[in-house]
Length: 594
Image (cartoon, rainbow, N blue to C red; front, side, top):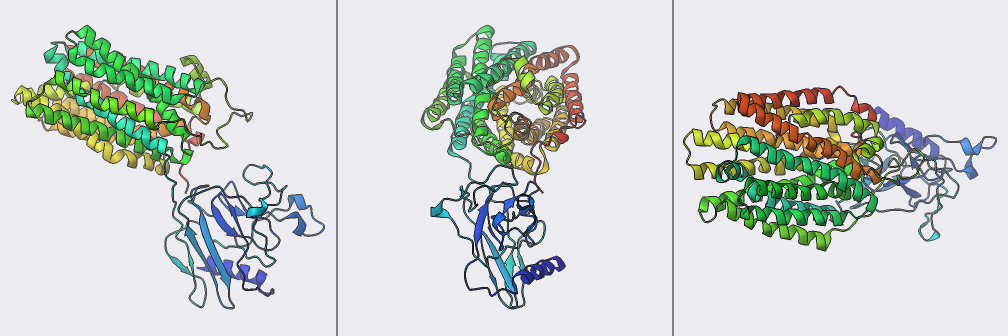
């Protein structure tokens, strides 16, 4: 309260000697704020530290001083914290009376560009570039007795603050108001929904299909799935770099989703392990083609500050589609109308819908870039990475450091089918009939995606505020707990542990998927090579899945599934510890604004 009254008295003392007419104050806008400009000052600018600053105009600079260097904080304009540049717009009105001063701040519904009423030649305190004059059609003429807006205090909180003896109040309900996500983000989200609907319609029954329908062993299962995921990783690097070079990311998305949509139904016609393995590799090859271009496309469509929220929305749709596919699969299997091969044929329907959405709605967006998304010499990168070496060479120092814990975690990230396989075996061991045990697998997978869908948006948004690194570390720790419980289940634990394992696995995904992608975006400041950055990280993660799955399968066969799962838990815990030791915080990957 003392600071409030002190600011009001200083402001009032500057204008008390002047006869203030009953006219509106002169207003100017900068970076989403509508502010008042006091007499003798040019329009205010926002400093790099978040404060509102006023630059004295040369015409009103005190005589005998260097006018070009005369810069000072406006007397009654204080720091605004907690509001990002461009996040909100405000409208304000003020009036001076003999006994009080009042000010109100109201948010406008959506941000839009605004021409500054700035005389030509003035320099911005944001980037040092000359300010352009406001067009005459939109110029706000300065008033001789213009009033300076006073925003007292540091962090705006909801509520009212009494600012005068007559009961007038100053509103300080400045809460961050984010812009809407563009249409291409929502279109890509619906594409992910139907594509995962198609994928998860069949994924839950694949372990039983491998082990019982085709009579393959656990090592064959690990080899097929590990090879398929490694193909995904290698293809993501290739497709991400190529999409950076061509700039035609929707076409790569279309090719990837089309290949996957054709390969999954064909599994229903396969009869041998070799053909099934080839179709799984083709399906995953399509996933690799579409993944990095899609992530880069939606990243370009939003501002850096909204990457976590955007990826959270996308992953929420992704998991909602997977949940729908799992529930539909469980319902069809429980009805007795279909078997696993018929499910493979049904997967063609949602796959075709995903392709249709791409053709109708997905277009290359206008890139939303910041001034930081440039090379040191101010030029855009013209040669995005093409190979693993090129991607490594062009990667930022922070991204290179991040690849070390990612590699360690990848060695412990065996195929999820091993978890489904041990759950299936435990259901059979405790006496469930085979059709019931088979029907439980899609339900387990659906439970996983229920939790993922409910929490993905929250996880991405939280990474914008509490930090990407902290959430990823905690998520990897949860992963270690998941595999410890899986080892207990494999050692003869109760069957209900399978449900707990998949529930915690969903929490792990909430804490890691969207924050990891947002962290990669933060560590890759050049937007034109961001597709290659995503491809490099996904390459390292996916290529590690082949040795990870083969290692887990070999330990399963040699020492039992419990040893395999405990090994994965130890590797995940070590990766979480390593992530906290490499010092990514000093690279300032878009930290939350206080």
